[in-house]
Image 1 (cartoon, rainbow, N blue to C red):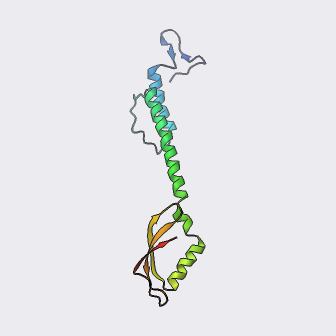
Image 2 (tube, one colour):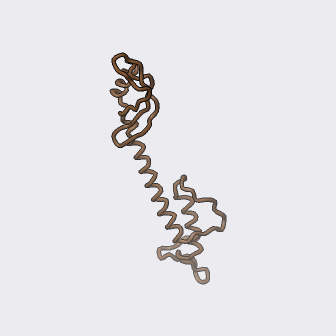
Image 3 (cartoon, helix red, strand yellow):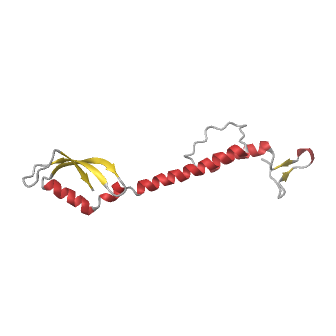
Length: 140
């Protein structure tokens, strides 16, 4: 790759090249794609004489930014999930007490999560004071 002066020109006479040369821009764009995009952004295999036009490079760059924003938004959702926040020590204690008092025999997996609650699957217990069905939904 030639080096350019402040005016964007390299060489003299017949070997004069500007920074807007399509061949040089194409090769420079391929180098940028391989070096500056995040590793998880799949760019495919690049051959030795591959060139990318400015239009294609700019579209890839915009797509890369959009994917990065989408992934960050997805991670934020997971971090703010209700399931992680619903099982605080106080709630776990209440669930353990209901197991020990035979109100519930078993607490299963999460059936559904919502904005402010989660619903668990459970099996009813054998308690003399409370009649429990064989299957229950526990909303926390």
